[in-house]
Image (cartoon, rainbow, N blue to C red):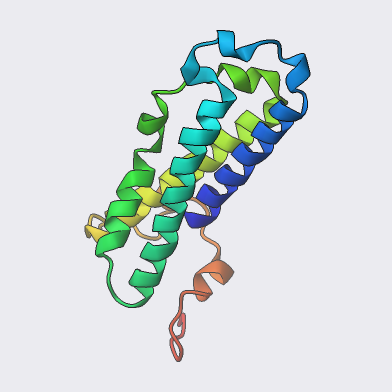
Length: 156
């Protein structure tokens, strides 16, 4: 969740930079609805995403220490990320290369999927055989899973 959420932040920062670098070509975007201004996205959306990322980082640290309560809240927040973005227009994205919007949305979708899996795991929603069902979890990378082993634990 954290990696993809952080990636979305980076893409948003880069796309805003790309917009402002060519701002003289954009016309007077202040004639657009305020919800579509790149400044609105910078000041509200980006600020909120950065705050959420801070929460994710804190939740990971608390989970390492054995407290999953904070993780449930932040996973729920990421799970509903697109609902939070419904208040903003996406028109300015049309003024930058398409790959920015595609990468931003793709990163958020991946973060949301991981957040949903975290929520399902913490609420013990999974059936015993589902946790390794790639249809639900996506491809399982055994090498990636090994990094979550505690000292002395084995995958066998």
